[in-house]
Amino acid sequence: MAEPLRDPRVRDYVMPTRIVWRSPAPAPENPDLLLSQTGHQVGPAGPRCVLGHGAGLLLDFGRELHGGVQIVAHETTDNKPVQVRVRFGESAGEAMADPFPIHGHAIHDHRCALPWFGSAEVGNTGFRFVRIDVDDPGKEVRLVSVRAVHLYRDLPWRGSFRCPDERLNQIWRTGAYTTQLCLQDLLWDGIKRDRLVWIGDMHPETMVVATVFGSGDVVPHSLDLLRDATPLPGWMNGISSYSLWWLLTQHTWWMYVGDAAYLEAQRGYLGGLAAQVLGCIGDDGGERLAEWRFLDWPTAGDDVAKHAGLQGLL
Image (cartoon, rainbow, N blue to C red; front, side):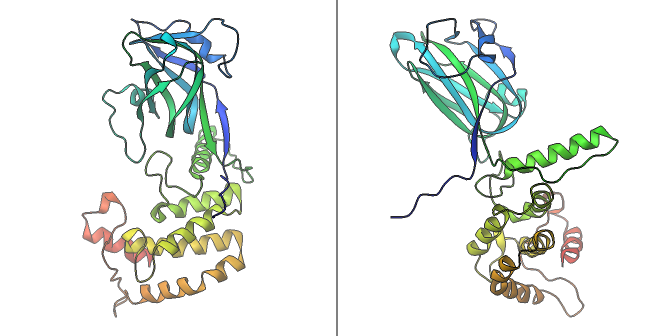
């Protein structure tokens, strides 16, 4: 029997900071209690946020998070489960959209049942805003609390940046925090979309990880996953330039971290890939990389730009 794997992430509960919108009619009762009440369903029968059929509200959790929400219910109509609709959005407009505009690689529009005197967790995506509506005719639910369940790697920030321009400082902090959100079980290209280990996006992420968080196992494990999933002569993620990015990311990680044992473990694959790439160089020194010849979507239909970019990568 295989040993269980320990999740490297921590789990934080985050309270909403404000109510952005509430349905006018039928209106929620006592919705502001959700900004201060937290905990489990067991407790005295005091004031609660009450949502009847058709009532809804939009919560702001104050910052981008990864995970879902925990909804704790007290009493429900006839002590039976009540159906609710839960929508997640990075913006208020996205969470309010109906129908929901796009799901991508995660579900952002859920219908689920809330139990009597119990709790339910729903969602696994990137979000800041959550809209909750009762979608069950003739039913109502008394809510104890709604908390975001934030999943992330709790890593110390070893690197820092300061300059006289506070706007630049804010941009730097946002970039570092966004990258930290992408440090899930492996290094993802995004917490909402695509939620993949995608080598085409890993090089700038690796530089941020090394600069802000220092050495760790998530970058090597992610690079190894791509290596093991792409036996030669295959190209990573099916794109020839992406294997070049794997080589460049290996070099960058070595220059930042200097892990000789890890680099030595790459010798066989790295040497084989380097020989394969050398075979894609013409006698004139020009690149002859195989399909799929891709850099990024803006140049996807421009063969001249693609050739220039691929030549630069080589």
